[in-house]
Length: 210
Image (cartoon, rainbow, N blue to C red; front, side, top):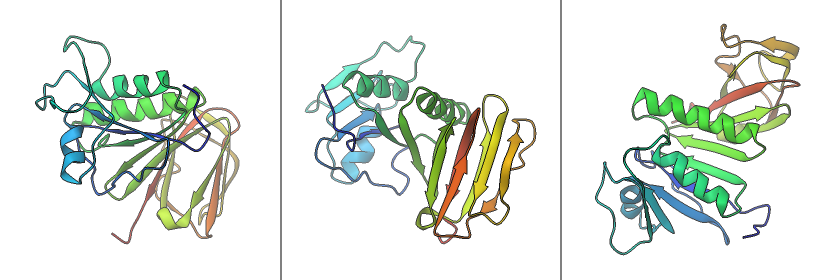
């Protein structure tokens, strides 16, 4: 399948929508990972596919499913993303990826960073927070999505880090995973910019008005 650049694959995990309902456009794909289909059902949305071993919910009977062996190396969410990639999608929005177990939440941050490192677009939407990542590149942030931002090195040191449009700017600095220098910054312009020359940054944008 060939997809156009603007279409997205939305994947809903077992932790639910957490206040963010998928806004679907023509050509988008909606996949539920295991119990994620129940969260979609609650807001009147039907996924195109449900993927899982169904250890946290009964499988639906009227929606296409991909049943996974419960003895597996990948999580249900990862399997759902893999299927979206196989269908040709390159931009992913993840829901229900944070707020469950600490282990799964951290694993989903790893998945997010891994997607971006491989050249895919990826965003996690959770309760009052939008998590993105940037690898050897530049990311623009819209103030409308939240003014408090934490920028953290992930998987190793990040070099040439520049933060423009922030209360505490950086200019070609180095961030490391061992010291959270970029935590709890604030956007002071309508559009802010996060850039990194070498390495990966996780970017947490929080809405303080909710």
